[in-house]
Amino acid sequence: MHYDVTLLGASITSPLFGEMRLGLQVENKQLAEIEYTWTDKHFTARFVGFAPGMPTPAHPVAFISKPIEAIQALKTGAHKLPTDVFTDTAVSIEINS
Image (cartoon, rainbow, N blue to C red; front, side):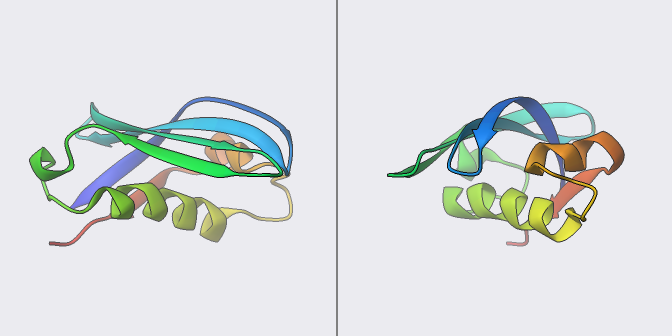
């Protein structure tokens, strides 16, 4: 299943301090959110939604990790922050059952 990833908000002050909220959409309908926060001491990710109820159900960890992998794969030298990818590229992930 193809999910579009949207940037809902972010505050990244340095590589070691930030927060980012992403949305997962299918056919322009937001189905879930993913919240990431990190400091020099911890990284926290939270899936906000019902993973078994998604069009293609998967473990929440898949919904948390795949957007980060997609962003990193699309990031170029022109992108200083992970959020910069959203300025010129559509981000999406595939979840298979």
